[in-house]
Image 1 (spheres, rainbow, N blue to C red):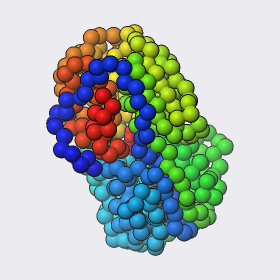
Image 2 (cartoon, rainbow, N blue to C red):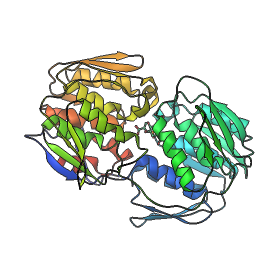
Image 3 (tube, rainbow, N blue to C red):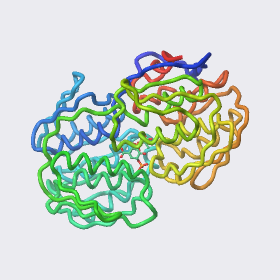
Image 4 (tube, rainbow, N blue to C red):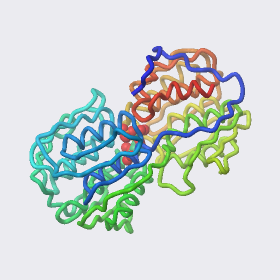
Length: 422
Ligand SMILES: O=C(O)C1=C[C@@H](OP(=O)(O)O)[C@@H](O)[C@H](O)C1
Ligand SMILES: C=C(OP(=O)(O)O)C(=O)O
């Protein structure tokens, strides 16, 4: 997605003083990819306004086109015209969890074989629970992880199913998103350790309800989706609040102020938790007429946080903890070892290489203050590792971020945008 050729490793720009900026950020990956799936299953043409244009959403668009959906993505707003779901088809999941988990239930509604594969690391990310759930809902599936094939028969019986979604909330979202189109809907129960990233399931439920789908989530760990049509969408995608993390962090580490425009006052996005997290680290956080403003207050305070619900914020928060003046503890995030890379191992390794005093635990990280120094920060094809690297690089001389272009997963020309602020 990045048009300019970037040096690799990329010298992360060092802030020479407080950064003061007002930024408009690209759309939410989670909302864009949910809206695309719902539009493909809807009862008429849909419009997505201000969608995110990035690798993850392009992969979703390509996957839905392969399944017979007509998408016009040439202009800023996208139109989606559902067609009969067709197969044979091939879906490239890249490294997008939303594509690998959300599309197999849609493929179950097509008639024929749909082959799924992705980037080398994607083959290691968990998906077996979605596939076994589909089997018990009446779909023939070959394989338990990437590569796998869904043999759709044109309809899915649906009904009652139990999954262990402790590895990813996306297992639940995947079955709910397509559930209304199953003959008997879906009555899904989670059985296992607590489900992570609950705001993402709340986003799924809220978006389904907005399209007229009946969802009962009144019992803990149980979601019942009634069979029925999905109303066509006309939706404006919110800015991606998780991708706001590095920009707000820039205010925090430089003692400047950054305002993110159009920050919703009410949202199911996990990134909204940044308001509380950054306030706990000593920043001034508040809404203005322009959006959400975060102002850094000099020295960052360490924090003790359970990030189980908002695990995708960990890399940026970890970078801040490494720069803080007092110890920190990040807990409840064992599941992020199954994200784009093993994020606990990657963060511990790379922050340590830059001098941080980090200890890796089974389900978290702890930090003690230490002076950081120059070095190369490796990113393991993980967009949010790159975010962590540039945050440290804004505060420390001589940090170079390997493969910063990996940010194209969820943010077009991140490096150019970032450099423009420093
Ligand atoms: O449904 C979604 O859009 C997402 C759910 C979360 O996944 P996990 O539950 O696997 O953490 C989150 O981390 C990911 O970035 C996006
Ligand atoms: C975990 C993430 O992505 P994915 O949607 O690929 O799971 C993420 O963006 O932090």
